[in-house]
Image 1: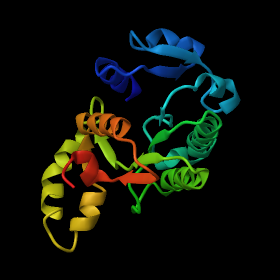
Image 2: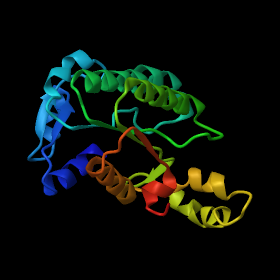
Image 3: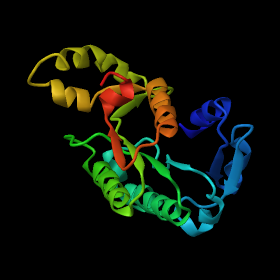
Image 4: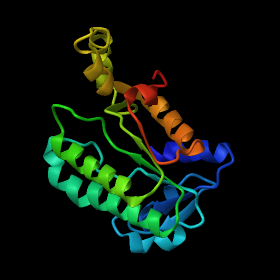
Amino acid sequence: MGSRLIPRLLARGHRVSALARPESQGRLPVGCEGILGNALDANSYSEYVRPATTFVHLVGVSHPSPAKASEFRKIDLVAGKAAVEAAVASGIQHLVYVSVAHPAPMMKAYIAVREECEALIRTSGLNATILRPWYVLGPGHRWPYALMPAYWVLERLPWTREGAQRLGLVTLEQMLQALVDAIESPPGGVRVLGVPEIRGTA
């Protein structure tokens, strides 16, 4: 998602720095300043964060599944803690964090870690935007399109509407636009954007 977000921000006149491992630095979009560091260790990059006004955190285990519960705690949670620590230390004005929709009947370990990170953000004193998608449709993630007719029905029935909307599908385009909007409209305090807000239908 970061590789698609960065060119949009650059095209809109934003100055963008991106954290990357040495082996990944060459894959950063042209025009982006690369910062070498470890997302799991705030000390490896926090001195390079200033003078940014917004910190966007997108680090997490790829293709989350219930089988990756231990990875969520080793990667997602540690990286989230490091991001909050670096943002606070650098005087960041706005943290953007991609969480996950909840409550939900599955992916409980993943949700628990994201909830812990949200709690850290709330107690940090940072102004923040927390986005809560459930499933993002995009390249390599197209099979859920088959579920869209069922979602259409569930979102219109009074007794299933709230859950279906909270755990609805969003497109990659909607997610990217929501991130850009969040970055360009920082809140005072903590703002949460669920699926309806990410879709732009709230």
